[in-house]
Length: 340
Length: 259
Picture 1: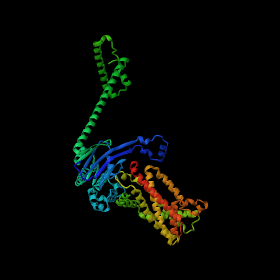
Picture 2: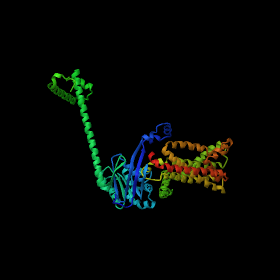
Picture 3: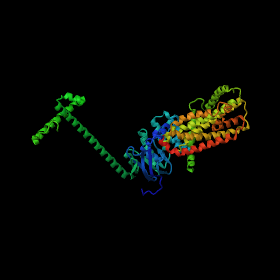
Picture 4: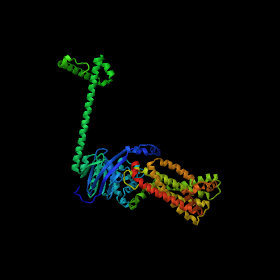
């Protein structure tokens, strides 16, 4: 971090974000009145900190990949950095033009044509009219809309819609670019084109924030990375170092998962063995036939053969043990009927 | 404050686009288009004149159509503007959740769009005045403060409602009922003297919307209204505006958590 003593474009200092999980309950006046008469404040129980005390500084030319498992707080962090969420605590400082490429195309007005939407969406992103005039042809051409420019967006395919969104959002030369898994827009051909466009934007002194589940993609695009885990910033630094830590983290998680699966398989085996033993004891002590056992223990048709084998195995084991115990302490007369 | 003004200046193009969007989409695909904003008040006023003219024995009064038209036009802007603004933040939640925007632009643009439609519809007063044989007098300047006060009032109330609606969905339905009550308290289609006789005219005096409508009528029909009727609605409108702005500013960062 120390090597880059240039100006700071994006700074987060002690950013925390709290969500209220019970907020849905306050939708109507009725609920508010009910809560007035309730003694315990239920809202306290539903507190959830999606981000906890996150601080970092980014400089021009930093391309940061944000890594983390599902629910780590990646999208929340992006939204807080973009200014959509106001952090509950802490401050985000942005310097320069910011281009958020979050959930492309969701903000179009469906009744509006592409032409009108380009101006509206451009205005939402804070572009000036002259700027949109100037870039209009580029945007339409890049989105491959052709003759559909004056067709209402409601008649577009979802691919066309996200292509248009991508095309508008990337028409600027931003100082800060926020990418939330947008590289998977459209078909293979368009994806190549969009990756090329984004690489183009990287030249120059842009600061990039990029979220992806694919470590490969992050490595290809970014030169720095950070790891989020349950809302906490676990690591921040050069891509190679952080990627190594991340791989270890994931590997650790995989080992835990493998252990769990193994344990589950084991318990299932044990349970089956117990059932076989029960069946054997029933047969021996109560003189039940095999069919009666199947009925009593509700063994499905398909498993009966295996079940029978299992009982036989228990029987053999019992016999062996009986012989052993007779050999070892025959005179003590251990009750072979119930013990194993 | 300075930062807010800067923001407003920066997003003035968006405000314009949003206003244009409302106007463009309102009459898209209708054959008569914006002419509807003239025909509609004309037709509804005709109905009101016939019904209430007969009911209150005013059919022979040539001023009665002008009287009703003023009330109806002003009230329908008040009603459309506030109701529209009320839903506007929630209606645009998909955008607000995605990009940073000064959120007041949505209710404000909706009110401005309704105001423009309303100003266009004022044109129908001309044929109605001709029909009534009522030449405009010098007192027509009274229309101007009425229009300004009405706009401030609607912006204030609209901002308050748009905040409330984010937190309580009930606000929308409650406001529908309240606007109906306000309509009956504003003497839109009945002559005021009826209320004066029964001693309930104080309701009118304390209803800023009625005071504004009365100014408008005074301007069109050529009579002076009292100083109270200028100053009182202005004071209420400014209080509403200040309260609305403060409330909106205080609560706007929480919107995203409730949308």
